Length: 96
Image (cartoon, rainbow, N blue to C red; front, side, top):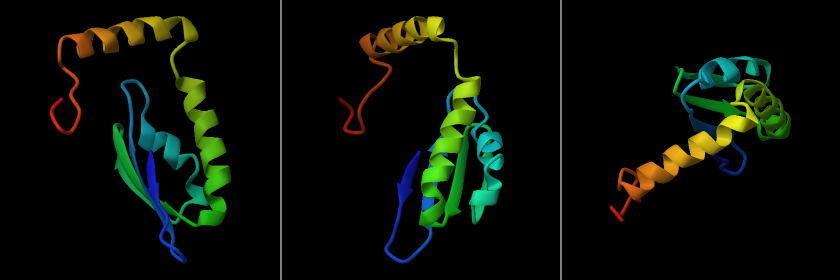
């Protein structure tokens, strides 16, 4: 999730998810802290008062952690990412 926080304005954020985590549903659980939000299971946009950011971050982290993969699955995911990197499937924005 990436946020911008112009001085004196609402924070605006953009979220991307991973397979198996409906990020918009997770954000919806925190709607009381938000000024606006919208999206689909794999991506979302939102805005919130900077005073709500810490609570939003804490609550969203907890919500996502409830659904995140069991720790024994991390090795499998890491192996898949490493294999994709070695095969050249992941590239930086510059193409390297």
